[in-house]
Image (cartoon, rainbow, N blue to C red; front, side, top):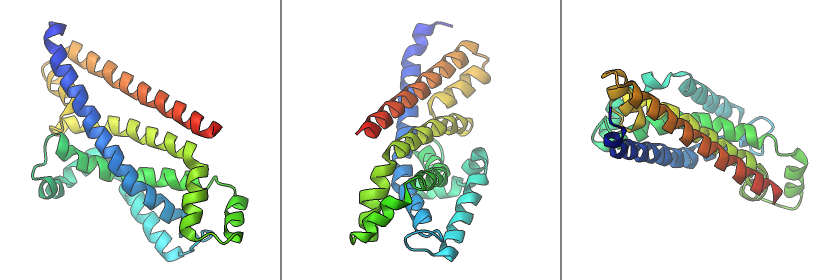
Length: 218
């Protein structure tokens, strides 16, 4: 194996993985953050207690989290094809990646928001803050370090999911590792893709820790 011949392909598939995981993380935050806020608000001790709604949401979240990603990937093929016109490739993979990560991130948000001292919430309410103001001015700012770490954790989880998506033609480093490293017995390709994934994961974790630390100090 000539490593030099593989460098352009490795670079391209690395960018593909970053594209899939990055866009999926963005959509996950857009949908998962409101989900987590809603879970904490509708709790029996929340600002707008709705035990029935909370139980339904919790059931859906737990159900979605219990489905293994590789099975979810297959189950969503008709939906993915209807949404983006195809069920293979990087763009198509974003759909199951997002749907798999939203419940996970929603729970992360819920857990992080629970750590905000009750006294701060009550103080905001005593000053006449609305529910939206309490969420936007107290809950989220006070939870920001934990939320940043949660985003980093979600990104890292999606890297692993994206590698599994390579089994069904999802593209990226996982696809490269399976089609060449595993099927064609190119051991060097497998090792290089693993190293690249490790570098990506470690880089994201380092960045998340730094950002969380900086926000915490402020």
